[in-house]
Length: 308
Image (cartoon, rainbow, N blue to C red):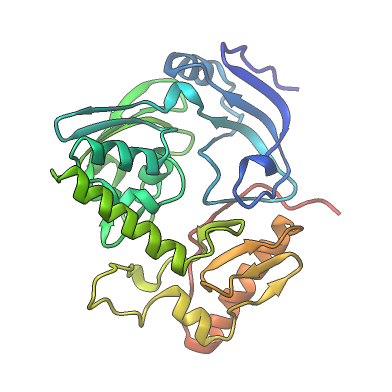
């Protein structure tokens, strides 16, 4: 049995991960580590045997953990990593700061990061996945990030290092982002607040926000994304090709493609991770048969299936 270093933060063996994901599915992690601060994380990773896998986890808003769990040390940041500091047009946010909180606090200071308001999750995931909506992406406002490498070194990452693409970056395996600096344009706080209210109203009218989901299930084909503008075209939207394949409302076990928005997969109450993943793969198969389009998952899927 591998001996793990003793951190100042909290280290829990065999932690069930289902309660930490928005979809409420998933088996146990070998260990869950909640570091006290950046130095605690760096010291722990430096001392951690090289053959032990590391998986940084945010608030689990865009994640399916398979039913057999994760053979890794899952690293999850808490209160020591949710700071938001604003200087001029620059916003320095800890990895655990929720996107919505960053948008609101920035708007109050006259900095326009309003596109983050309706994105589920925290800043770490937003950077990692180049999250975006309404035609704006994290890459557009990104200045730099601080990360801890798998060897325990604290490094600064530029946009060039991360190589931002549609819904992905080139963050090396096992590296953990701890903070990001974003820079938004100036705006009137009242106007920004109103824009966010409008975005929330639009989201609540078109997305199943009261259901247990993980946001968009699949990336929009060919890297197209919703701009929310009047001349926006919908011919290459994931929801459209799912509808065309007759998969709106489709079910496997306790998993269902939402009737309200067919690119949202929901846990109706008793879904397993396998139900969700199998439904997603069935959707991909039917869409490919119908339109020749190969949908790519936007939800990250990790871990091992349950053993029979």
